[in-house]
Amino acid sequence: MLESLNRVFDRIREIQGKLQGLYVHEQTVREKPAVSFSKKLEESIERLDSDIVDIKPANSLQTEKYGNFIQKASEQYELPEELIKAVIKQESNFNPLAVSPKGAMGLMQIMPATAKELNVSDAFNPENNIMAGSGYLKSMLARFNNNLVKALAAYNAGPEKVEGNQFPDYPETRNYVEKVIGNYMKFSSGSKL
Image 1 (tube, rainbow, N blue to C red):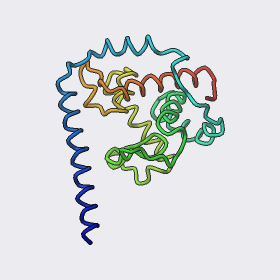
Image 2 (cartoon, rainbow, N blue to C red):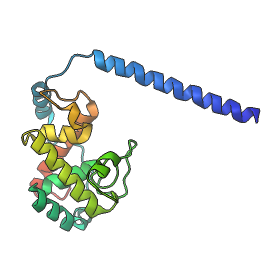
Image 3 (cartoon, helix red, strand yellow):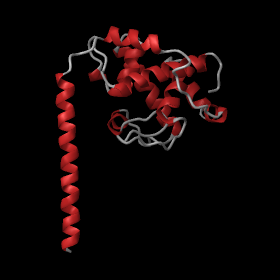
């Protein structure tokens, strides 16, 4: 029993250490000056070419399997099918059962709070997920005046992180936007990825 308690206390100390590290990281991030959106956009566009977009081929059956749902969402939300496919490719690589470390679910990686807000009862259901994710993406486009880069950044990092002319200074979000746009360009060119 004493050994079990020692393991519990060791685990608590380990978790406290990790939390302390997060606090230090948060302080460091808060002390950094804000990065202008236009500067980040220019840098992203300069880096965006086919050589840097690392896309693993998706089986064309994966894209075709959900084609009817993608087409339905495209028509309902007036989004290009290729854009919806590009987001799905980046979010889950067409895996309807994907779950992120942060808890995002399904093809378009819907967060539980977003699923609840959008009245999605089963975020792992491909049709529900594609409709909800596409609707959310459309709302981000509307919120950011049809600016695709900002809408994608908001889809990834949250809209509050993209308000004003600031672009989230998160490498994950910058990479996400670049890869989705790269996927979108490839799908638009007729590539099956």
